[in-house]
Length: 392
Ligand code: 9MG
Image (cartoon, rainbow, N blue to C red; front, side, top):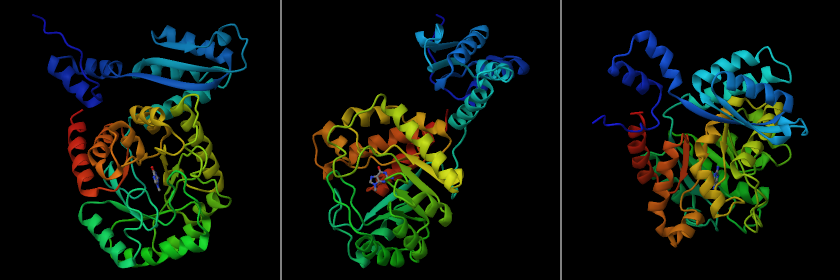
């Protein structure tokens, strides 16, 4: 018996180990290892003439590029492409594109950056392990799971300390509910809710505190009071927010939301949910950088449940690793959300196991931060999955 089998998606180091075990020549190991990793890289906005050159270059390296009909007969202004090849083939083509017209040298740089971002270990602005747990501390009267439970300062401090003891790497404090259908609150009301809590919690905990707000004034006062990170579910859309984040010089979470909390779940629509969200991030990252925000301070978040139906949420989860191509750490907030209720037909208080399943998948798919209600349980899930993934 030959005992043939398909191998799992193993990473570079393991491929080298396997080639060495087979007994390959050491030089052969270096040559063959990059041929064992296969990638699909999508790009949009290519000049059709450039797309045809790209296809020729890939074909001459035994790779492939799918382009539109309109690109082949040059009847379209621009085209999407899907490049298919091994690491080795991508490297060879990148070299050849450097001498080509139609903006292909810039495409080569982009491909190189994308593949590096996708494959490299992610670093968080404040360091530490690659997958960290953010405990949720809502000080709102109406949040969907814990609304109203931690509105008194001493309760909030107790809860923060408990989350830290349970292994939270950071604590997210929010004073305005963003659940579907919720109404906005005034700056004054939000400040009144969050500032006393941040002032009490910050000196008591050793982990960073993030402030869940989209308002520049709340962000500024919260940072003065002791917050270290800004969690903006409106993705820096509020006027003056990008400049404020730049001036504060703190890490910022840019979350994607289609619409507004009041009506975002009415009929969300996308061409391709992951592509559309990535386009939003490309645009927002550029805008933030122009305002003076350092790229290393940006964390992105696809915003589960924010203007997405069940199918959208599931597709985002299934393709979470694609977001790491953008070169920013990725945050996921799936804890006890309504998509789990739709799958399991369970109320928020009975969605712990569903939340842990989503969290486990996210670790495997390169997510750097999990925003959760159940810290101790999630920390165990993260440690378990991270130990397994370290074997690849
Ligand atoms: C405040 N808030 C509620 N859900 C969230 C999510 O999924 N991500 C982030 N960043 N914040 C959230």
